[in-house]
View 1 (cartoon, helix red, strand yellow):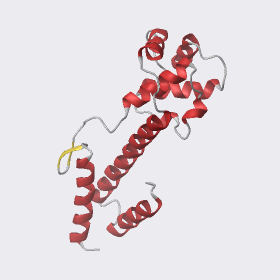
View 2: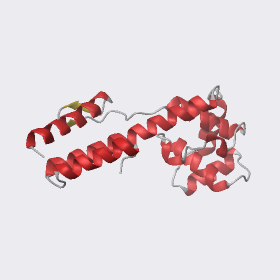
View 3: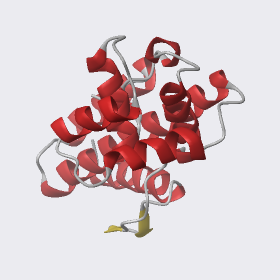
View 4: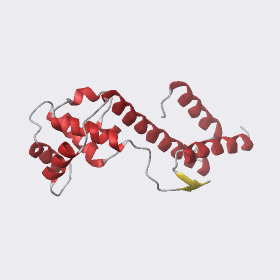
Length: 172
């Protein structure tokens, strides 16, 4: 692969990353908030906490798909509680076990009672899933760009990885 083609591949990847507001200028990583659907996450977590939905209802989402650390930890707590009692105190204990501190019971109650309930479950799930997939893809693009820039990967290998992602739809 020519250096001109390699430069085009890098420029295309950087343009895609810039379009998603993770780069301020070519070659300059900007620490803006990654794509997230925090309002949808809050609605899903609130619905879990009120008992209006069970954790199985948000499949295919998993805790790793949630951007908010507290949201992710609460979904993880529901996974580990496996249908047992899920009062704010029980969830707070599960959060403490994950390393969270502070008035967790109050934080859980605020999420449970202070967030509008899910209006469209499928829409909230789709928005959280899309934001999660976008974050993973952008991280993959940054990693591939760094490998290309440092010579840690050949341009042919980079192109093969890009082809795989384009055909399988999953960053490796």
